Amino acid sequence: MSFVESEERIALRKAVSEFGAKYGHDYFIAKSRAGEKTTELWEEAGKLGYLGVAVPEEYGGGGGGIGDLAAVCEELAAAGCPLLLMVVSPAICATVIARFGTDEQKSKWLPGFADGTLKMAFAITEPDAGSNSHKLKTHVRRDGDDWILKGTKTYISGIDEVDAVLVVAIQATGPVLVVVPTNSEGFTHHQIEMDLVAPEKQFTLFFDDVRLPSDAVVGSPDQGLLQVFAGLNPERIMGASMATGSARLAIGKAVSYAQQRQVWDSPIGAHQGLSHPLAKIHIEIELARLMTQKAAALYDSGRDKESGEAANMAKYAAGEAIAAAVDQAIQTHGGNGLSSEYGLASMLGMSRLSRIAPVSREMVLNFVAQNSLKLPRSY
Ligand SMILES: Cc1cc2nc3c(=O)[nH]c(=O)nc-3n(C[C@H](O)[C@H](O)[C@H](O)COP(=O)(O)OP(=O)(O)OC[C@H]3O[C@@H](n4cnc5c(N)ncnc54)[C@H](O)[C@@H]3O)c2cc1C
Image 1 (tube, rainbow, N blue to C red):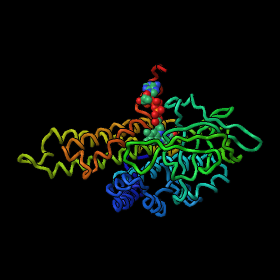
Image 2 (cartoon, rainbow, N blue to C red):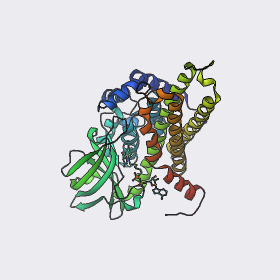
Image 3 (cartoon, rainbow, N blue to C red):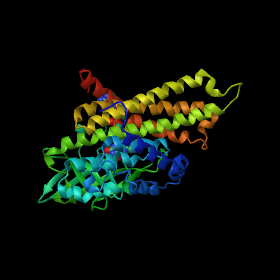
Image 4 (tube, rainbow, N blue to C red):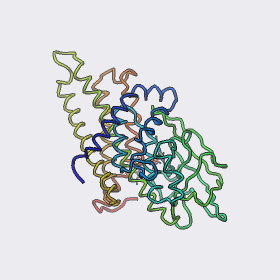
């Protein structure tokens, strides 16, 4: 582990950054506003191997780690193309299947993750459980060799564009992860109207006694809890990376505007009322990036527990950094900050999302208070 990234990682960042610039923020906003997907971007990124950098080589992937995938996600976001499904499909789903799946499950799913031709959503959140995963009610039960799944999930991203969804369900001995093809009988979904400017849509899912084959459960059913935790750390690392990438984009826009715009004798960027907040947020973004890279390095070296603490801290820091970055970028632009032309107001929803999902700011603070500081639990 080192304080500087490897030559390979730096080269990967540069290549992805150049690739992302071919599409750019205007493309991303136009697609989002038109209700369309960024399919060509996803497919090209898949063909170039960027979505599969962390999939083992024997299944057609790049053989890298979550740190590489996080670098791809961050650079695409910094280029104006934050891909929400990267946080779930290649990060949680592929990682969990690669770590815990049977040989058959790996052969079935990993090649599609490696080239991006397969997309999988992830569903843990439930309407009545929210942040309290102890209250999850979606359950599976055995019926001969099959499994029967029943329950409801909500705020699940991208169901209209994925092949399957990895569902966290409860069974007699605790949680299990179940792969549910989106065309399964008894599986329906309902779109939630959102004011986010993003190509991915959000859905409530209904599983009405969905019958699934024996191999729908990932790996061994008694390893479910371990699998859930193994998936949540990459999710937080990726969420943090997408946030720091988007924060870099917002601050970049603010800095270039502050250098050009002049309403007194010098550019507005000369006024410390504007330059200091931008400098402060730049530092906060760099600190969040450093913690994200630390969390990824710990995860990739198999230190799950330490990675969990770092991933939570990174996710918190990145969420605060992007919320501050977009807010200050809008302020720096004056009235233009709210115009469509400058593309900043369209980032507001996503900048707030980073404080809420995949884990809220308050739940991270609870985690740190209880685990890092050993303070008593209030709930
Ligand atoms: C755009 C979007 C995409 C999403 N994509 C997915 C997805 O693909 N898959 C998926 O499974 N989920 C997804 N989610 C759900 C997301 O993970 C949840 O919204 C998030 O975990 C918070 O849960 P909640 O919304 O139920 O809030 P609640 O749990 O109801 O919390 C509401 C508020 O209360 C606070 N709170 C709750 N408990 C405590 C406590 N003990 N102490 C202090 N404060 C507390 C929370 O921090 C929050 O501020 C997505 C959400 C959004 C908005």
